[in-house]
Length: 199
Image (cartoon, rainbow, N blue to C red; front, top):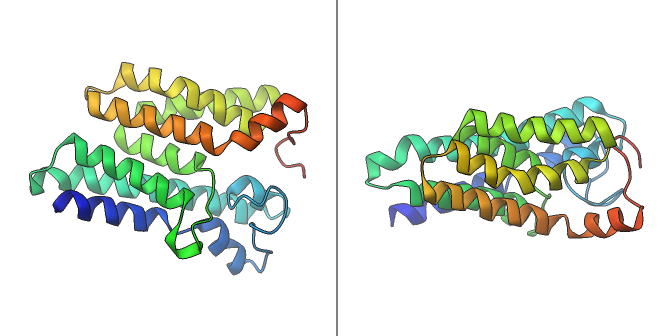
């Protein structure tokens, strides 16, 4: 029962869509209605409001970090181990991708996964972010950066985490992230994927 509570709490935390909330606060269009129609920081940036995009990025990352941080801190006190932490990590991502508060239409989860990784191990999060940043600087394509970082992150997890359960969770999250980018993969292959900051 305690594991169910952890998973449900993580899912609900993940279900808060900062792209939608921030856009409303700034009087911007709903990010689900323009551009890529993805409620994430990259699409919010298409409005030209850099502060709104930055707050979206921070909020989506923070909720991933918070859910896993709480699981790491509280799980032992409830007799729970790495399995509960792994489940919470996946649940907060699924909350972001399929939020109950927003008709189950959510973002792709790049920032949220970064927050999750930072909570599991700061070096793991930094390694994933450094990979994303390097690819972004070279090619200026957010989705390509996310896909390459996702492909390499399980390797980083294997090197940096001391729990097979958590490494497996990182692998599942990476696969889910790649799956969420399936339309971007098609655009990349056809040369139609837009650059960062461009429509």
